[in-house]
Length: 316
Image (cartoon, rainbow, N blue to C red; front, side, top):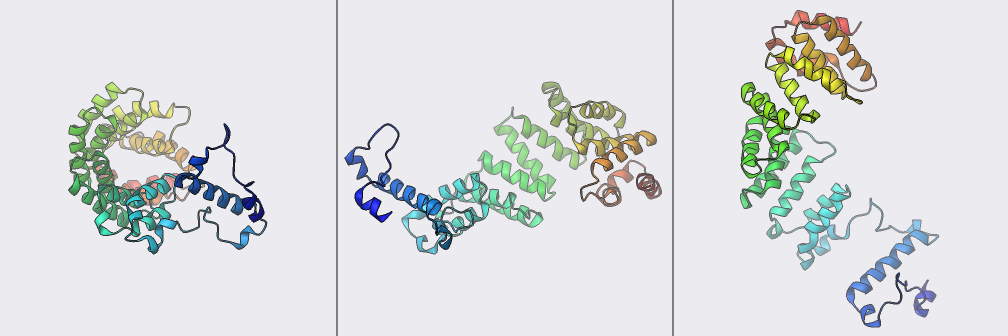
């Protein structure tokens, strides 16, 4: 390789002909040439496994090295972190951001931090709260930033802070009054807060404007179910389950809807079908009925004894 470089034979010739001599002296050309040669080395050299390749995902990113902390390269670190995140190297992106000085903690920095928290592989309430803090810092700098508002709303929702999420989605509605997803998320928050009439008013409007959107139909069906209008929800669930590839979650919600409407035979059949589809998962029907949805079921006038009878039917 050294021989080839000295003879000039290792210089790549781009498609379209020779590179002009003056362009070959440009820093950008020299950098690209160096990287190309380095890349070829780590792909072709027979003993390449003896070296740590900078092109492997597990390798530390140059920009995360403390050597570059406090240098002019910090101005490019958020851009590098964003590049890494687009390729799902979130841990590497986080290390790059760790190397930034506080003077570079701008809105872009907090948006990237918030996204990393929301995408964490062990995501839970802790990371959701961390994301809320990041998006809150971003909103301090730019209160009407749509990306920060959406991130903050999602983080609030993940923490079951439905009041905070609703307030944020209402701000977004003023900024994006015609955006369907914002209105749909607003209705979901209203449903969680048991403000059913307000949620239904918004959902009926969305259902009229987007009759073929299953996401709208799904939220409307569930809101009707939990608001005591199960009979109306049945038709919507029939529509959802007639799709070519219905969502398994719809079977569970439909089973609960049938149960709340008093159709016990159909409810047991639907819930059994749901459990058959879930046999290879970690789903627990006991956890779902006795804990996750227990309060909701009781609000429908169903007693603990009736819940246990339903479980006996399903687990036979």
